[in-house]
Image (cartoon, rainbow, N blue to C red; front, side):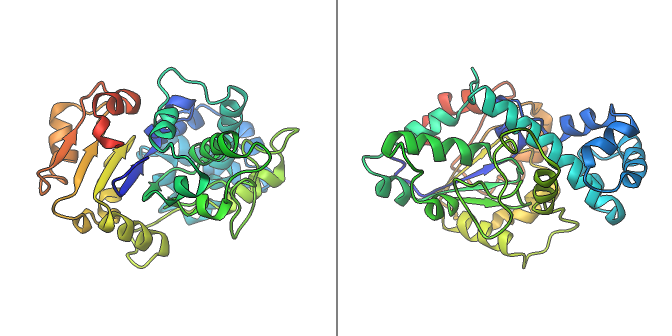
Length: 304
C-alpha cells in the first residue's frame, strides 16, 4: 500500500508509453491532414469548420492544439472534435494491445497500491491530478482492481472516480467509473468510433483560455496538492502556464517532491523545473533519459 499521502501530477508524457501522443505530437500529426480528412474527423460537426481549423493547424506557432484553441473561440468546437476523435482512436489502440508496453508504469503503480481488500485499496490517500483527456489510467486501474477482487464488476466506481482530477476535462466518463456527464466507452463504441462518441467526448473537453483560480477542478487540485506529503510529477512538461495554474506555493514546506524530467536538457531543467521547485529542499529530479518507468525504478521512494 501507499502509506504516504501522495498526489501524482500527470502530463501527456505519462500516457505516451501506451501509444498516446504528447500535445506536440498530436499537433504535428494533425498538421499532416488535408482539409477533407479534417472534415471527416470532426464529423458530426459541419464540414465548413474544417477549412479554418486546417489553416490554424498548419500555421500556428503554438506547440499543442489545446494552446492554439485558447484564443480561437470560433474554431474551438471543431478543434475539440478533432482532439476527441484522434484520442479515441489512440484509446482504441491501447485497448486492443491490452496496454502492453515495455516502458509502461501502470503495473508498477498497481503493485504499489496493492492492498488486501477493495476498501483498503480505495482508502489510500492517493490522488491523480491530470492534464490529460484520455482515460487510460482510470480504465487500467478499474479493470486491474476488478480482476483482483471481483471479476463480475468493478470496485466502487464513485470511490475510484474521486481519485482523479481532470483539470481540462476528459473524453467523457467511462461506464466502469461513471460520473455526472456524458458517458463514452473507452476507445469508442464496440463497432467503432461513432459520431455520437466524438460529439459527447468533445463536449467534455475543456479549453482553458486563462488561469481562473476559482474554477472547481483547479481549487480541488490545489487543495489536494496542499494537503499531500508527497508530490510526484510524471510526464509533466512544466509549461509556465500550467505551473502557474497549479499554484505550487500551496505545497507543504516539508513535502517530498519527485519530478520526472524526460527530455529536458540540463539548462531547461534548471529554468523550468528546478526554479519552480527550488523552495523545497526534499526534491528529487530525474535525468533527461529517465522516462516514467525508469524514474520510478530508480526512485522507489516515490511510491512507498
